[in-house]
Length: 416
Image 1: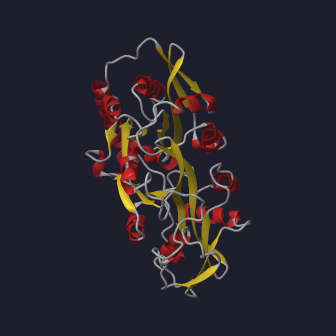
Image 2: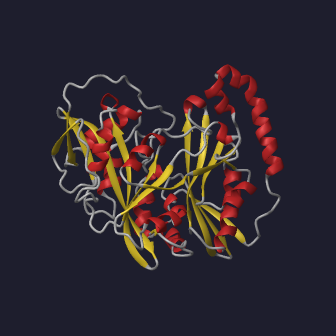
Image 3: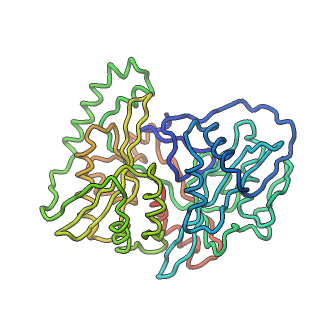
């Protein structure tokens, strides 16, 4: 386990946006010699989906399906074509990387951002420059069906080194520690690290993972009692105003979320959250959510939060993640989010952990409710910020590097 609470596995280079198999560790594999030193780098072809999904599952022990691939890359309403690159060796698919286009809004006008992710390289073909060629191939217009020797680098500053997406304004990604240096070498800029906030109800799974089952049985009850006592002391005595009510839906209330998303847009660049987005991102993909909370004041919508519940059987741990909130800004939303968080704490009191991401959620509110940040003790002792938001402008103003850095909180809102 690499953090507290247990995290989902990180893919070889970039954090993706689909739901994976929690708690599984990546295959390490020995670096075995490869028979030939040439790799074919090409765009996605019709019929590649099965091999792509198989590579994901073979490397990461997951349970992804062709339906997941089609949903993310073929059914995306912001894309007219599939922007996925693959690398083959002797006809076998050994690497994958993709771009997911996302409509963006800034100063009343729309643009297009491209979220890079889902980069997977087979263990037998790592440390051979496949990452650079694979990731770089996403941005060269003349790279389709070319063969690149293992010691040949892609000229990232050469002509045509932009995405094969019409009118793309900027690229961004959630880089893991393994991918960060490589992405920086390709000319990308750091925006800010992700900061996770975690409310610990039961640290027994942490003890089981670090110290073993026997130690967890002995120390678990004491650790659990200590965590509960701290939360009881730390929880704010504030009560939710009587005129604020919270409802819960197992489905995705697209109409209500669309209405909320149109209020209180943050300053700078932000994703376009509307009916089309919610119908695709959440309603069409049941593995991305496990319930939606809506807060109202006298019948008027204030805020919404989508949650996801994950379990790791080997650690007997359950995590409830607050994966999305609307609107992204505005004072009116604070009372609604506070009421929703209180309801979630009541509904999921038996969960091992509750997890949220700042700055998507108000930091003061999370601290009031007993959430701790992973950039300081005690969470920093075992985890710390695990992802770095990186970006590269293509069109310049109003999507300049400076504007992207100032808009990092809104760009983090797509990380679920």
